[in-house]
Length: 223
Image 1 (tube, rainbow, N blue to C red):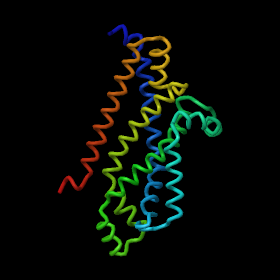
Image 2 (cartoon, one colour):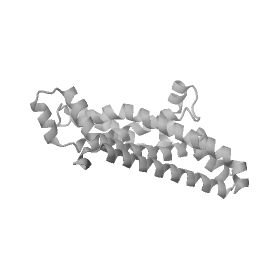
Image 3 (cartoon, rainbow, N blue to C red):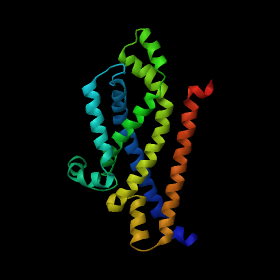
Image 4 (cartoon, rainbow, N blue to C red):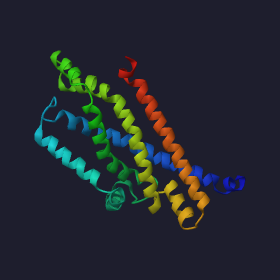
């Protein structure tokens, strides 16, 4: 065991941090873009606080198309755009752009689902007090839906772990790259198992943190 860590310890640690860096940054930007999309999808519905059929339909189509493209295909298709924006087509940093583009529609639907759970009565009370659309969104809908949004963020983070590992298989670095180079091409089963164990541990940590934070900020559980 000590010989294994002496030989592959630094490799696994470095690439674990690369995977965490890729996933964390991608999740952050996906929520920066995905939350406004999710809010618009909710409030522009026919029964929403800002009904707009054409906007809702158009956004729905965009989100559905984005979610329907497998990540590996999207990654390859976006290479020219990634090279234009990031300066390189593939690599530990370059892969963040396709990760964000792939995750944003997913986040938008997660946020939409979370906000749809907000009690309509709370929104009606805010409307009766004369609150405008912006105030209702920022002071009612988002705070009330925050626990579910946080819970959904852990799911998004875990999903992006899988995407990042997939991208690593074609040159984006991280644990996926280690698994392919050593576990597949060199038939080193121990390295493959080590990468799987690390991913399992990371997923468990993220899920526990997400569940804990969601319960802590959920007002309904404190009543």
